[in-house]
Every structure is written in C-alpha cells, then in structure tokens.
Image (tube, rainbow, N blue to C red; front, side, top):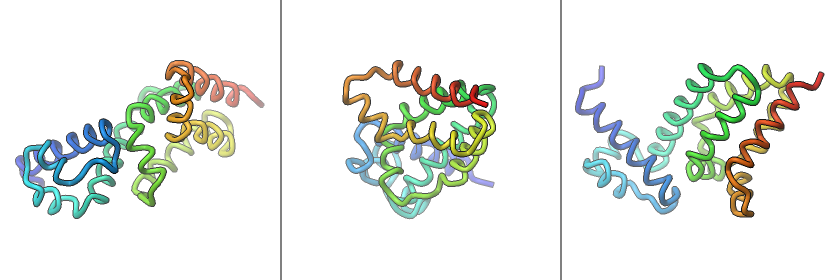
Length: 168
C-alpha cells in the first residue's frame, strides 16, 4: 500500500506534468520544471518515474486510463465513442502528438481496447482504424492550423463514425 504522502506527491507530479506539457509541449518541459510545479524535489520525480520518458509514460497511462473509463461508461454508439475520443485527443493534443512522434508504447494496451470497442461499434477493425486515422493528433493539429474549428472537426469525426457504423 502506498503511503499517503507518496500518493499525494505522485498525483501532484502527474497533474503538473500534464498541465505543463499541455501548455508548452513535451520538448519544452523538463523534469525540473515538473518538480518545481508539483512542489517536490527533482529527486522525488526521478525516484518515482526514473527519467523523463518514465514520467511521460505515466502521464500517458493515466490520461488513457481515464479516457477508456469514460468511453466505456458513456458511449453507446460509434459517434458518441468517436466524439469522446476526439475530446480526449483535443484536450491532450501536445501529449498525443508527442506519443505519436516517439516510441513510447505504454498505451498500446489501451489502443487495442479502443480499436476493439470501436470495431464492434462500426462493424470492422478496418473501419475502426479508418476513424482512428482521422483522430491522430498531428492530423487534428493540421486541421486546426488550417482554420477549421474544433466543433467542425468533431462533427465530421462523429459523422464518419456513424456513417461507417450504418454501412452493412
């Protein structure tokens, strides 16, 4: 069982890392920045997570686990699922892009769960991957940079998922 102070430190470190990565992007955040923002020494971060990559893996795991739980409880249709996933990607865009650009594979289990759930909703694994391709962080970032509004992209993703689910 984890000590109460250790659990508080872990939560503070993960919250600080998530916030700073969201504000600055992963490359502009150091372990020292996270430690300072969390109110702990950098040694605490290194002892707990090993290095920056370990910290990023922990942030990804926590973020993905939270999304999977939300999607599992709330989504009954392909469109709802895709919309919820879009919201997660948008809220975590710098982190999602960083994961896409690295070899961090800690979220592979969550990705597999996502594919399986979406495949059941849209009718095939290929269709699930089609929706997920549109939801890549770099793709969403590109569309936003082209002037598309997040609501417009979200509506398109939901429409795509619902259309694929309706095909026989």
